[in-house]
Length: 152
Image 1 (cartoon, rainbow, N blue to C red):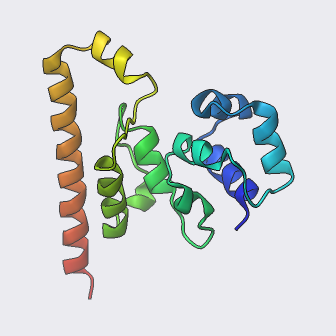
Image 2 (tube, rainbow, N blue to C red; image 1 turned 45 degrees about the horizontal axis):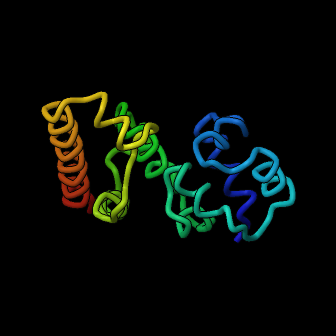
C-alpha cells in the first residue's frame, strides 16, 4: 500500500495544492511533499491526511478501490452533495461507509470548528443542516436500493 501515491491521488482529485491539504490536515507542507515524492508506505501523519481528504485511513490505503465518491461527499458535506455523474446512483457500500462515518464520534465535516459553527448559526440553523444531511443520506440509500432492483 503506497501512502504517498494515494495522498497525491486524492489531493489532486480535490484540486488542492500541497498548501491546501496542509491547512486542512494540520500537516506541514514539507512533510506532505516528502510523503508524496518518496511514495512513503506509512507515516504517523497518515490519519490526519486521510481525514482531511475525506477518507478513513483504511480507505486511503486501499489502492484496489476508488473512494472518490466518499471523499467528495465528506469534503463537501457542508456545502453541496454534488457527486460526479459516475457516482450516481451511489453504490450501497458507499452509502454504508458514509453512514458509519456519521455515527462514529467525533465526526465533524465542516472546515470550521464546532465552537465557531455553533457561534455562527442558531439552533434552528443547526437543526436545519442536520435535517438536510439526513434527507440526502436517505435519498442516496433509496437510489442505491432502486439501482439494485433494476439491475438483472
